[in-house]
View 1 (tube, rainbow, N blue to C red):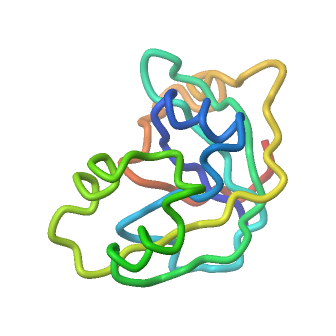
View 2 (cartoon, rainbow, N blue to C red):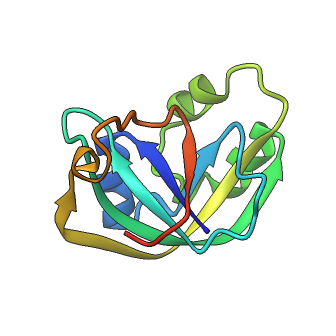
Length: 127
C-alpha cells in the first residue's frame, strides 16, 4: 500500500535540497505498512511531483520533536510550533530515497474527480 500526502511547494523544494529530512504531521497512517509516499505539491503546482520511502516514524510531544529534529526539519521554530499549535503529540516521518518525477502527474488525468487530501490518502497502486 502507498499513500499520497499534500505538501506545500516550498516544503517540497526543501525536501529536494535535503534541508527537510522529516515530514511533520499531527496524525499519521493507521496502516504503517506503507511502501511509498507520493508527494502532491499543492497549488499553484497542483501535481504529483515525486515520492519517498518511509523511514522511521517518531511519535512524541512537539517540543521534544523540535529539540531532536530542528536541524533537519527545514522549518523555522515559529513555523513548526504554529503548525502544531496546542497539540500534545506529533509525528515525524523520515524521508528516505526521495525520487523526483521528471514529468509530474496531474492527478485529474488519473481521476477526474480528484480532490487533494487534507492530510493524506491511501493509494492501492504505484503511480
